[in-house]
Amino acid sequence: MAKPTVVLLPVWGAGHFMPMIEAGKRLLRGSGGALSVTVLLMPAPTPEAAVDIAAQVKREEASGADDISFRHLPAVDMPTVHTGIEEWVSLILRSHGPHVRAAIAGLDCPVAALVTDIFCTPALDVAAELGVPSYVYFTSSAVMLELLLYSPVLDEEVPGEFSEMDGALNIPGLPPVPPSVLPATMLHKKKMSTYRWFLETGRCYMKATGFIVNTAAELEQSVIDAIADGRCTRGVPAPTVYAIGPVIALTPPPEQPHECVRWLDAQPPASVLLVCFGGKGLLPPPKVREIAAALERSEHRFLWVLRGPPKDSRPGQRVPTDAMLDELLPEGFLDKTKGRGLVWPTRAPQKDILAHAAVGGFVTHCGWNSILESLWFGVPMLPWPLDNEQHANAFLLVSVLGIAVPLRLDRERDNFVEAEELERAVSTLLGGGDGEAGRKAREKAVAVKAACRKAVEKGGSSDAAFQRLTEEIRRGAVNVPKKRN
Image 1 (tube, rainbow, N blue to C red):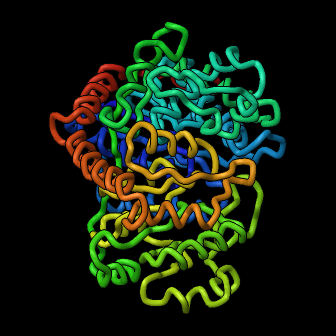
Image 2: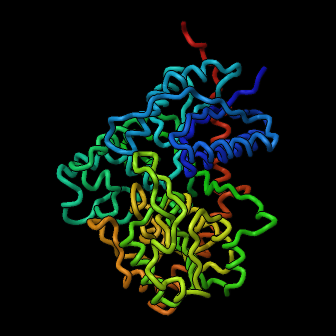
Image 3: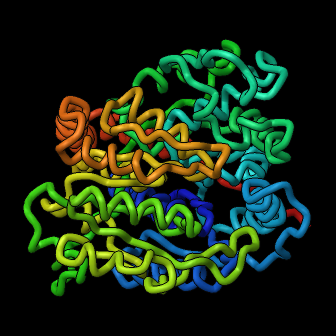
């Protein structure tokens, strides 16, 4: 009899696709050969994303793993009417619903589970129709999962705009939450047409069998407990949370180190500030000028990954280009910082950089993958959130974990940070400013690094959660009825 298979349905973004594939490979190893993995590939919406996904698939296929296979779904028309990027992705998934159903029904083996991405709530209905257990692979923090589940309650408690309310929000398992850290979709709910999508997603998540969250209990225990106790869902038991992280694809360093890594080799330990806003982090000229002014005046060493503007501004198409540094940076900046700073104008190996002993701090946009990488390597952070769930993640770093020095930013000015504020925070984190705050963040970074690594070791919290998940999935295998004519 053929092995039961776990069907993965990832979306195409690097921060979504790679972590889910890595989780699938861990399921393979954890099952002891009892399971296989089938990845359903939706066509990527951009040529750049298509190239990235194809390269990843090629690497996996070349690795010789017999128990992981890839199946391409047919193309669908891209939505032209939508309320924002979140709904745009969800509409694409809804169009793929019949293809997902047909692909699962066409498998010649039992199906143990369907694991979907954060955005793939329409697939939960497909799983229910086929009688297949369904899991949401949540690539962000448990805090963000809680906000989605709790959003219907908050919607009733705060009838007006969250941005206009006085005081803080009481959200189970968290210290008082300033409304200013909510995602923009929630903060201006009457202005943001994606708000209804946000509420509906929170409700739809209750259809899942469980949540596979790329976090560790040691990072977000109080939030995980609040979800498990039903405090986020009006006392109704929520799907089980499996905190299995940090899930990070770690690869051996290349034989020929990257130029950024070679530059770091010449710097003293913990002396360099990494400034990087993720694979799609785009900064308008005013923000670039403020960063440049802060770095020039701070006199600290830095490695700044600076990308150029996209060629296409449509949803899903905003891919950074290689930066033209002479056009983006203030005149004379490179000469004035020569020797202590490196500005890198294209993609950089962020994990390899964070792993380097010379890196002592990280200005991050607070994407969850970047945060996990920083935690894994014990690098304290300066959080500069730009969009989506990143403000909530920054709140977690500062107010819950204590691993970051806060940056005062103006959300009404597109999350603008003044040069003086960034200069102050850099000095605090790397030394020379408020010594106590920087020292605490650096010490906490060391402790959290140890906790993350212990969590995924045999017998650790994430390892135990993963074993429970694997056993649940093995027991859930069903024979799917074939597609009806």
